[in-house]
Image 1 (cartoon, one colour):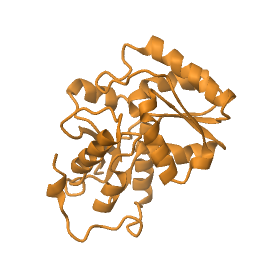
Image 2 (image 1 turned 90 degrees about the vertical axis):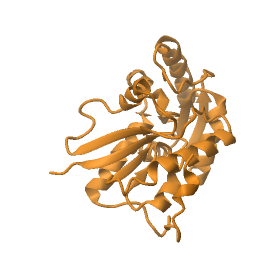
Image 3 (image 1 turned 45 degrees about the vertical axis):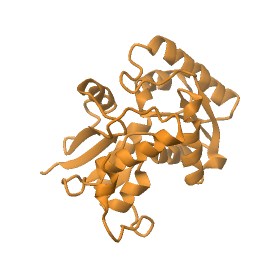
Length: 246
C-alpha cells in the first residue's frame, strides 16, 4: 500500500538538531505505518513571532514552503505553529488538506469543555492568540491567556530549562483553572511540546498539545477523504508563486 505523505512545516529554518526536537512531537507509535511525515523548515531567518512584522514574515515563509506540496506529491500539509501562519493562504493555493495547530486545538478544546485558556511563554505572543481566536469566533470560549515571562528559544526549545519552565507553567495553569475558570488548557506553542506530559500528569483538566492535534486532524481528513472547502478558500485566478519566494 502506498503511504500517504504529510508535509509538516515549521515556520523557521531548521538545523538537523532543531528538526529532531520538533520531530519529537510525534514519537514512535504516534505516526501510523501508512503515513510518511516530512518536517521542513520555512524561510531564511529565525523569528520569535514577537511582533506583527515577524508574523507577516512567517506567513510568507510558510506559504513559500507549502505552495508546491501538491505538485511534490504530498497528500496533506500540517503547519507547525500556533500562530497558524499561512493557513488561509495555503488553503487557497492548495486543494489537499491544510491544517494548523491553533485552529485545531482551540476547536477541540471547545468540544472538551466550556472555557479554555492558552498557556504560553511570554506576553509578546498574546496578539497571536487574540487574532486567531477572534478570527475563529471563539472569543466567548476563551477564559484567559497566561504567560510565564520566559523568552522562547526556537533552536533548543525547552531543552535544559525543564526544571524552571515546567514549574512556572504548572503554576500558571493552576491559576487559569482556579481563577479564570478554564476547564481545558492549550499549550501556546509547538516549541513547548516537551512540557505536555508533565502538565497532563499534574493537572485535573485536559491539556492539549496543539502540534499533535493538528497532525492527527490531517490523518483524520485523509481517512475521510475530505479537505477544506474551496468555496470558503477559493483558488487564485492566476498562480503567482514567484512573489512569495523569500
